[in-house]
Length: 619
Image (cartoon, rainbow, N blue to C red; front, side, top):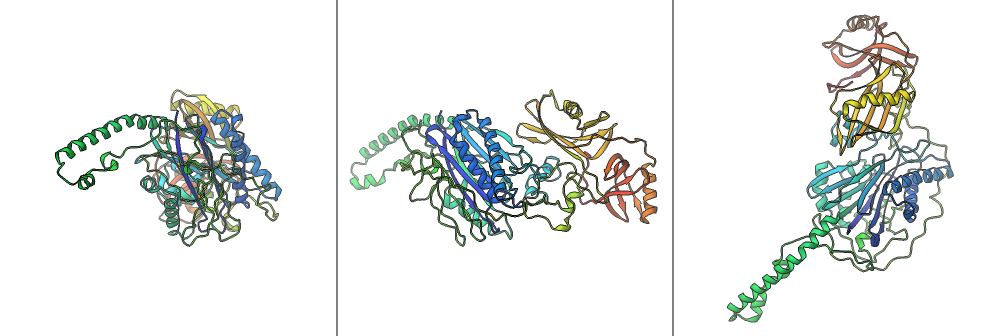
């Protein structure tokens, strides 16, 4: 089973003082095994570069011992858990709690399998088609799943830097596995969010055919970042992979091409006979060359030569290892080639690490176009394995960074009250930006418990999901005996072969504000539950005021004109002091529309949020 793999990679500092991204490509081409790893240190926590470097070092150790994990999924899970331990050890050594996101793509045994944590992505392109990508573990991704924003709006959304899981810290990471189809010739992009934020899906599909060499990749990224005023570290590895089917198809064409060549030569011989009177040199000059005579076809070897060294593009990539000080950008070609720095940028010299790495003294690596793969591998001399550093970069001990505050806008958003946030990836918000996760201030909902668990429950169809999810949550004590979860009514978005079912917790059939659960269903099985739930609701479910009475009373209290053209929804609202019945509805207060919640007991204004775009459907 022949797999052909070639890759290039680049890391740019962006408009930042330090590059906290790292990447590495590990290669054992003789066994047709490759591993691409990208790590993005989180800027919202001190020591992001330490965390990213620790992820790469953990990946290197796992790669060296990969024979101990023969199952691909088991190997990748082991990699993430090893990275978690390595990041925490590195952070404890300097008195910090660094964190990182990561994505890894493993090609082994004729399969391509990925694992990711956070918003680093693996993206698959084939020809002119955008096949699929991994699903980010971020609040912005939840907005997309719920239809609040489009895919292309994620990059600039205010919640883009809020993640639900990461590598490092007290909480165990929640990685996600994805399997990829290797039919035909594919382009895989493994990147940090700094890269995918620069391009829409359509732009990325169109641009991938222009990425043919290390120089073209660096030029593309550098010129695009130059148009930004303040952009994050940007790291990308582009890998072209031809699966067994593509190799076999290409190999089967060779006999036909040879027959075509013979036919062309015979035809030329006949033409030469008829035009024998022409000068010999003129006859020769009129003959088409082999390249002119033959149509352009993918050229692939039928099998790999076991004693042949990998080509420059199959060589292991260096980790990006620039200094942690300000001013210098970090970069590394995935083939281990020294790269000239882009114009106007400083770049560290690439180096190759690991026992399976290969270096080349000169020349620029090139990626074949998406329809082709290199025919032959160049012979190169293997380099001596580079030693891992004995210790991570030294950092002056500092007080551990507190959990980063959310923004005010996020506090008021029902979605933000429904899911846990690890921390902003970028700079921490200002001190007056609001409460930290899990606390409450006046006029805000009280804290609600985070529920995240992996499950494995068969479901015949989507209608079974709420009932079975409620049973799991009730049995675990995450919701009370009189509680359940109900489908929000929105069409579930598809994530490849998986679907995301959005559900609202209810108490005696009354929705609980801010308590929402997402279930992921894949191939007839519910595999994950995540969101916010409560289990201690005790209150009378008969409202003292109707919706109209609540509006009238509130208008008198606030001395404002309050009207509504819609009937409000009775909900259960949790504030810092407990639970109470409340009315939620779209109302007009002195002519300005807002989503508002009034107490169903005394019409107190509990929550309000100005409406920019009112979307129907779902709670």
